[in-house]
Length: 119
Length: 114
Image: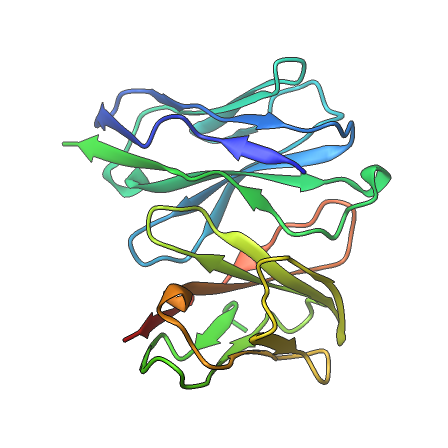
């Protein structure tokens, strides 16, 4: 079974600065997907960024980027120019790929990191 | 269609009672997932439907839990003989079939068993 570990229960950053959230995972599969989801206080999970394991290039979405280290099984999220609206719980998640017999499986989530933005 | 809709948003019930939650996915999405999230934890996968077929169930889904998606559209999650340990947020998500699919989540149903 796959596991996802987020070792930072809480992180704090000054507005406009950069913060990195850590995530490690454990799997024996070669085909999988990794995600970062944001859960604001309203509780609706929103996809922030997605990374396919077969892609070497790190995914980027505006101010959000990842550092995907496949050999180290590490998938960190960098938020640049932090804004007050970035304050939320951030969850790292894993999903098996089609070639690993998945493709439709549910997501495996980490415990989350609470991100605080200091004005 | 503005997204995944879940009802009710909050439910308080007495221990031993049965409860049912409803999830309306995004209309063209054929995959539907149920998750449970307890305080301070990430969501945990419960079960998954493709159209009306329930294809996977987690070991977390005890015999007191049952889920249906009778016409491949909305889904219901029923918990029988509720226990205090069932108190949690129940999240529904839907997605389109494909090799890389983004799951869209609803706002969840917060269950409190007293």
